[in-house]
Image (tube, rainbow, N blue to C red; front, side, top):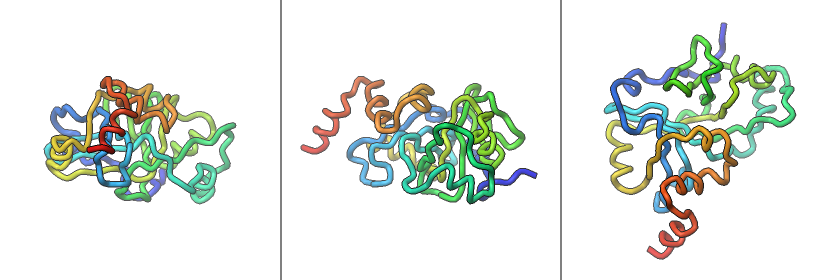
Length: 202
C-alpha cells in the first residue's frame, strides 16, 4: 500500500475543470507584493478555475530541511544520488504535504496529470524512486503549496501583485533557484534590477 506524505495528494477536481488562461502558467511576484513569504517568488499554477487556484513555488529552498533527513524521517533507504535534491518551499498551505512536480515519464496510480508534459505525485514511492535514481527525468520536490480562494488570484493579478507568463519547463527545472525570478521577468523584456529600483523609489 502506498503511503502519502501527509493528507490527500489529489487536486480538487473543481480546480481542474474548464479552461483557464492561468493554469500551466508562471506567476512572477512584483516587488510591491507585501507578503514576505512570496517575495521574489515564481509560482507554477497547477490548477485554476472559478473555484480557486493551487500552485507550487518553484524558486524557494526550504531552510534547514534536507532530502536525506526527510528520507530518514520517512524510514526510507538513504539516497544513492551524488547530489541531494533540494527540498523546496512550495507555499504556506499544508506544509506537511509533499508534492513532486515532474515530467510525464513517471506515472503512478495516484499521479495527477496536469497536461501533456507535467504531473504531480505526492506518494512516498516517488521519493524512494528519486533517491534510487529511477524517478522522473525532471522534478521538483516541495513541501506545502500556494492556494487561492474563488476570485482571489484574479484580484491579485489585477492589483499588480503578480505578472504572468506561459510555463517554461527549462526555467522551472533547469534554472538555478536564485536566477528564476530574474529570468522569468526577462521573458517579458523586464530588467529585474530596474524593476526593483523603480519599486524602491515609488
